[in-house]
Image 1 (cartoon, rainbow, N blue to C red):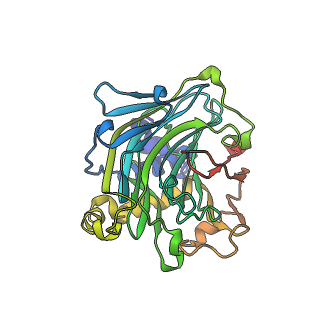
Image 2: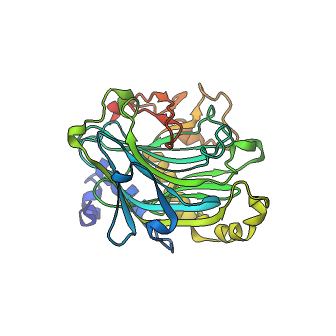
Image 3: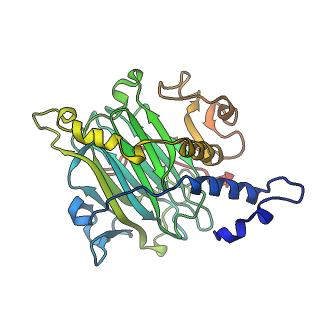
Length: 352
């Protein structure tokens, strides 16, 4: 949006009340104000990543520092980090496909499912496409030690159009904290507790990025499928960041011991600290854009999982299903696909 249009004169009504556009302006500038850029070292694609599947649909930029992932009627595509990491900061500037994108899932996530098939760990950003004219939705999730029956989904809208320009999406994972970021704004924090036990991811993971056909669930519970007359669908990734301790998952020296020094450096980085300003921005994002939280889904979890921080003012906005009290029907489904996130959630976009 044009920031010049969001001055005081258009952000407030003559009665002194915020209009809906004015509320957007307040939220937008609060989030933007917290988004002071991190000092990140980016790397070329071939220095840290390898093609995962759909090689012909993975297109590197001429300078080797960006990559496009394509989905057509024959295949999707994806890439994977060349190493597994014991904790890390994983980040990329991403631009999502535009126009009709129903049935498409673009995922940016960490996992070790190929190494630990029955006890894998995972941290997800999953972006779900929509019919033309309707916005993308996305969710975050985490698993530890194969706890796929105890999904920890949160689902959100965005405060911008992710198809118009690049935005940075990041996952910080340390021994005691997980933070999901968008444009340096923290949107979710999970603090490890002893009660979580193995549900907190602890084993080395690779970074993945994929685009694939999720027609069976991604948009309105599978009502709207991928329409290949709009193909190819293109997700773009650039300014790639891999910060962490690369390890061999079967090495004799325990990863925690081998990576102690690197972990200490990671925890000292700017992005490992949620300042009061960032925490305020996170609170405003969650108040405005989160429309499902497992922490408030008392039908699914009569006793909230131990990492949940129940905020009374926030809880009042949600039904016992964990969904907002106004509008929407978001039916949860799980799907498995090789080399893609192991759980997914369908959205009924009728509340847009």
